[in-house]
Length: 269
Ligand code: ZN
Image (cartoon, rainbow, N blue to C red):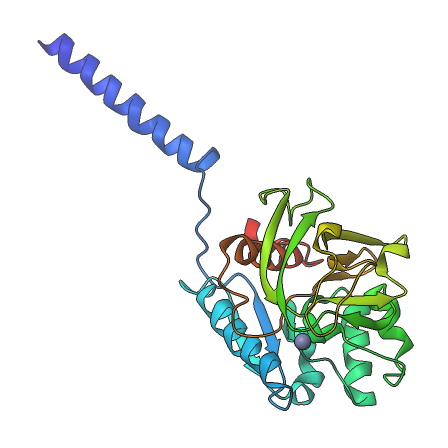
């Protein structure tokens, strides 16, 4: 009997001992003890209604991602008030808004040139011949706004790069919720520093009811490898968050930018 007890004790010690070792070395989850990083979401209230609708839903979406205090999210409709302390943030979420004044642009340039993070939606990258901010085109790796479909409508998107962190768990193609899709001149596809991750399928053509686009290149999600940035063309209206695949894409894009922080990957903390 004593012998059996010893065996049982030995087995118990071995079992819990190996559990402890497993917890240290191989445990699958990594629970953060504190907020992992800090994000600043900026938007503009003085924009077209559909762009504000998207901004309001985007604020809600990113707030939900903070649940459990995974990270700190600050939200502003006044980017200018933050330009003296952009370095406090590991990532900027630009929602249909971009710096306008010379001071704000200079602060943004300095932040991005020194490893800052940016995830930009829709009109956050809008620029035309009147914008007069050549650095911004260098940053985007793209030219000016060229044309769009109208009205907003769903579209079939194709994944261009299937083994990228942002796309690896997405289907090869999916129908994205209604949006206003942009073409660019020149297209970021002509820039060797740019990786186009998703595009509108050519099977969408002709796309539009009032303004009909019959051909051309609609890159939808891209990154310029010279910066810690990703641009997503979605961002028009109040139905953008109705699709789980697209929501997953947004999480992937956000997570990827954050994970490449030059100060270290906060998800490995
Ligand atoms: Zn729009």
